Length: 539
Image (tube, rainbow, N blue to C red; front, side, top):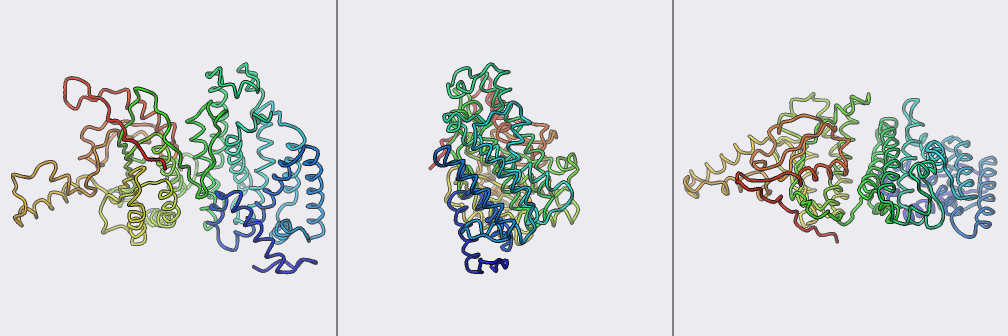
């Protein structure tokens, strides 16, 4: 790349500075590297420069003795502001950051706000009385950095700064939960003291493991606020240019995955923390411990309903609902793997969905095809085997090719089987199976009297797909809508009012608890045990 003309900074030195920033992010923040890699090539170096500067600032504030940290941070701050005033820098990493600020006219008051917030955190352990004070901290250390992105992403609308700040704050909440055990052990409590007092807790109690009920309530309060930040940030993907939206989608998804994990752990997060995301941005973790007597369903099927209604309730276009639904699908896969579910089937596109407006279909298929490579990498890393169930002769060619490649790429995986029903209709499936059996009978390879359930099952779109134990439909509708009529013969049905994009690990866990509480008789007089989940491999 070419550099901004600065005295004392030739193009070669500037290029090396940008490369240094990129290496720092790839080494120390690999999930952020993955997200940034989805941006247009002209934008990526400048995001790396902003993040490289923020990362170096944090490291200065974290390493060494308290007195040494304060001295180094004060010097770093003074040198940064001097560089921004003079328009050039000789520092090997800061040079790229200064160039980015000058080139794109980034707001220097945001840089000062960030440096002030990090300086205050470095000077003394945090002591937030209220969530408002905690959020002021979140805003200072991460919301400011997120706002610095904005001119690089092509902002749309007056709400864009607040939306990206909320996203940054939600991501910082994830960081707090990841570091909770280490910070608490070091005497740093990033939770509001008012919450602790309300529940009769002291910071020292948080690592004790006692008073579980009060500690669960403490974590639940933080989760409620974290969820409100995520909800506030959701429209952010519509506030930037289309080419930059995948970057924000990935960051939102990462924060949502970490939220789901904290919601699963509740008070155990205080001693266990939340494991960081993998370099690819996924959350591959071993199945959680299931309480005795709570048999998990082996096969869960989901009708993912309500994307458009979810968007409409928020005043958002339908495409944002579909994108949010895509994030919810990744969350569902992670949740199923975390809960030890072995088979998962989702209704992605029905034969009846062809009746939707042509422009919506074009947008939907294009978005799915664009996301397919990243989704494929995520699912493969999670050890998920993907199968396509449905007609294969009508789907747009690029999406069909992406689905076929995903099947081939993940064929050998065995942690979880994900069956994606695309252009699927249950009656069409049964009719196709009947035609196949009729053709065998006509050819003389099958006697009509030998046609039974097993013969029909082998002619279905996805032979070998086990019977469904639990069907979940979101968004309040109470019907199966031509979905898996053969495999649903003895399934337990659960209908939830949650719109699909709001469905996460907590909702899946609750659905599985309802399933475990039901008696499954299979037509017999005595209850049969719920089908246990098969052991899942985690390595």
